[in-house]
Length: 252
Ligand SMILES: [Zn+2]
Image 1 (cartoon, rainbow, N blue to C red):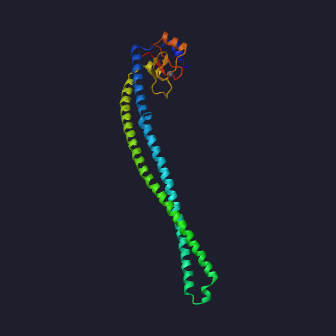
Image 2: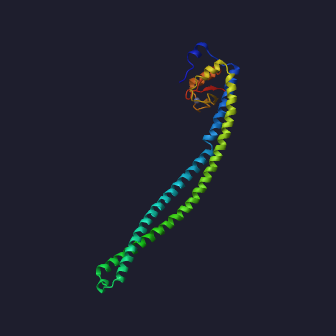
Image 3: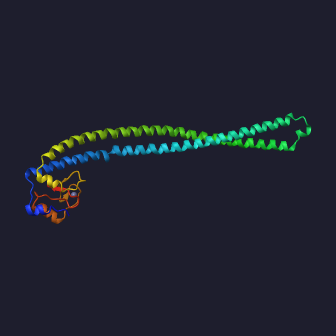
């Protein structure tokens, strides 16, 4: 539990009327800053951009995967074509050898016949392999083309969402700059008591003052303990701090 400590006990520090007014102004101003900043981090534009960017990334990943499948198949195709070319040459050579042969026995050379028949079946096998690759490539290229259209459209949507988010970001920054200016001038008018009290609130809390809402802290929503509620009831003009978040709590 945070306690005002010796200062409260010994000197019984009390806020003046204008101190309380400043604290309430401070609460209003800082809560506007927090709310304004939340428009950016928690608004639909932010979620929309994340969603669109993710959709684009997913589709682009699919397209890249299909593209690398195509590349691998094209490499296979080149290899098959090379082999096919080699077998075809050998086949032509062997056939020529057979037809040019003047020797009758050579024409019926079983070894050459066998070689031709083997080469023939290799040519058929590799031709079929190439046709299978071409068929697969056709399917993949069709998929790549339609994915490409989807990727481009997803990119446009993500870019549009990014534009909207950037526009909001600029608006939020502009509004916050105005609010910060107001805050700065308010801070410079605070009494030493208020300044000292504000220093007791944890540094990471931007809106250091919260209004008391039905016995709870308006900042963190925690219900006050009965002792704090009693303390607030007895001395509402003294510095009172929320036991949970450490904000200065004041009656609105
Ligand atoms: Zn609180």
